[in-house]
Length: 191
Ligand code: GRF
Image (cartoon, rainbow, N blue to C red; front, side, top):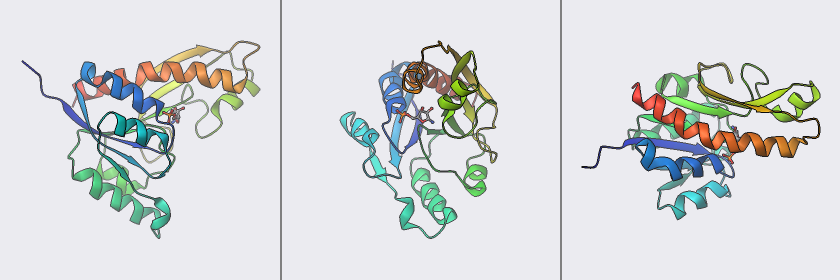
């Protein structure tokens, strides 16, 4: 007998390799991706979704006068699918408090650092420059403070003396693809 799948909506802005990992594991973790929404029309993740037969939607933030107007449109589109959780996978927009409060406790993100270290951008460059021994990735709940919500899963990656930023990014991304589907399963099991 097939068990019922939990609906999720994934927000992206770019390559979508994490989206791909979620697509590839969707059966294992019991999810159905109702829609992939991108704020960028050229995001490669849109192709990945289409190749998997998943509904896609482009909502360009430039078409809105304010962050709030953009976020209201996002809410309207997401609500059509009534998803259990909203998964940010390389979504490069800061979300308003209105959006975050609307879906309180149901938005998760993946960040390429061992939070609370290196919030924000250029995480690998900063980790190397600071002489850190480890980099890594964190899946966390999204709250109104950037990259600061409760951590769901983290994975450490050793920084070798000869690691370039690109090389480190690759190693971390590989781990992201393992922990994000796991974290989604874990979050859904508690809802
Ligand atoms: C990942 O490094 C993720 O941690 C960060 O944005 C990047 C997205 O990569 N939030 P991809 O689009 O999933 O390939």
